[in-house]
Image 1: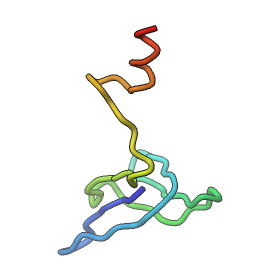
Image 2: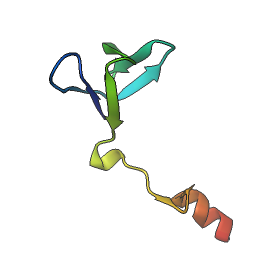
Image 3: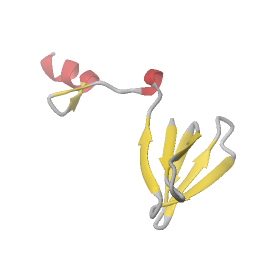
Image 4: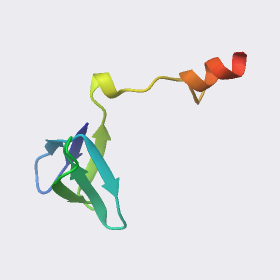
Length: 71
């Protein structure tokens, strides 16, 4: 995923595999689970999934859950 933040006048981004949210910010992890960065909530803009990580929603419900409800 891509974490976008604005520490000054320009936006910057960090690509990570996973993150954990804490009271004051988010800690970013690589695929091995190692910490690769920290972004405080004050400068965090948004977090975007990479195209292969996107999850589809239909009507506010995960597509997999919607399929189960129809059965």
